[in-house]
Image 1 (tube, helix red, strand yellow):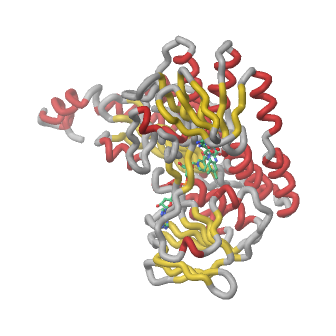
Image 2 (image 1 turned 180 degrees about the horizontal axis):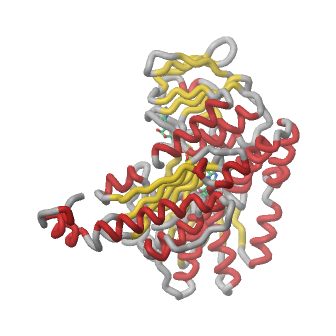
Image 3 (image 1 turned 90 degrees about the horizontal axis):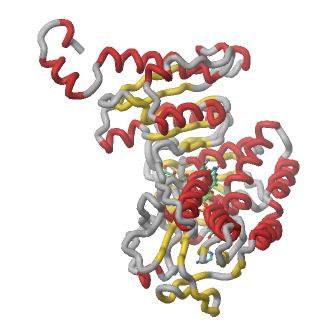
Length: 455
Ligand SMILES: Cc1cc2nc3c(=O)[nH]c(=O)nc-3n(C[C@H](O)[C@H](O)[C@H](O)COP(=O)(O)OP(=O)(O)OC[C@H]3O[C@@H](n4cnc5c(N)ncnc54)[C@H](O)[C@@H]3O)c2cc1C
Ligand SMILES: NC(=O)c1ccc[n+]([C@@H]2O[C@H](COP(=O)([O-])OP(=O)(O)OC[C@H]3O[C@@H](n4cnc5c(N)ncnc54)[C@H](O)[C@@H]3O)[C@@H](O)[C@H]2O)c1
């Protein structure tokens, strides 16, 4: 029994059925989940239309065509062809081995929880009384608000700010922390902030919304810094939380803390649960992207089919598909500080590449982070034109723990943005060679007197 038929659920269900297992997929909305209808696909379609300078009408037509007009007949047919029984309705576990779907009770041997995530609506006074959009509405309705205020400057807020500003809405983004894309290296948020400001987006960074009031026309938002904003529509992009409520997980002995995901071990099995319970995708709260949902689904599939496989999350990319785009992978400087990992950092401005001159687009930068104690790349971030397309080698380098000396010897084609990683890789390799092979060695050397120990 697979609970939730989004990216992860579909993949697990079809894979098991193709391997001859008896599989039911429970879905209460659309088979396919968020990504094709309300998230990745329509947002990337609108961003592309914006880059191409299409009209809003053309962009909507393209978006809705790509999103299959939010109809799931093809996805249901794919499931049927794989041999999966689709049960329409809301699923809830009654007790180990039994799930209720809209009044009907079904038995199961193994349960895979793939119920995704849902937007968080911040507890702002008056917010519940005004018409709100979450990203799902912003990516499925035809309206183009004249004045749009977006709460939250994470990946969703930045992508949708760019979409709506490009098609002519007056957009303001209110971000409580002092910068956009707070989870990533500061320069990434600065590059995106610069691009949004150039499009006329009003960025209110370091300000929270105090309260919201309905006006005769639209709404007024009062900010913590004393400012106000008037809007015809408020879009909440203030984060998402794993969808775990009402699933009956407690009957399986699974305790989930508020706002957290279903706990899973490295095989994506839920430890300490009664019976075989597994989870994949956003509901685990681990990586929250479609490619991570797919990866975890493959892990569940392999283990359920008797081939033990463990997930490794060290090199899962995170992309913000704005123009310029942001690609991050592995550990960010903020995360490294939390984990007390001492980083060697090297960066390079894309403007110094020949490709930037050829493209007449000199925006952006790349930064690489190595663990100083091991001499291995553990993270990277790039903001720039098509960064998501030329940074994958860094994900491979992190995942494969490729030595810096070897990475520094890799040749990139001329003239490409990919050349931008060569200088920082050489710098990191040189600093690692110079600084020593391990923390103990360096400490030992630092204790020695004379220039050899000088840092
Ligand atoms: C605006 C936006 C843009 C994004 N863009 C990208 C992007 O460009 N690239 C990227 O990699 N990621 C992107 N993401 C993230 C991506 O959409 C998610 O990581 C991905 O959809 C997660 O897949 P999932 O299978 O875990 O969950 P979902 O696709 O959400 O599937 C969960 C399914 O479970 C169903 N369900 C829930 N509870 C029950 C129940 N009790 N009974 C029956 N069915 C139930 C739901 O109806 C849903 O269909 C974006 C997200 C947003 C919000
Ligand atoms: N391209 C992609 O892969 C992609 C694109 C979009 C979203 N996603 C996924 O979707 C998830 C959700 O993205 P998101 O941008 O909604 O969440 P997020 O948690 O990344 O960002 C939310 C932002 O809202 C701010 N915020 C929260 N409450 C606020 C308030 N009251 N006022 C002002 N600001 C407030 C936070 O400081 C934070 O910066 C992410 O986990 C991401 O992985 C992925």
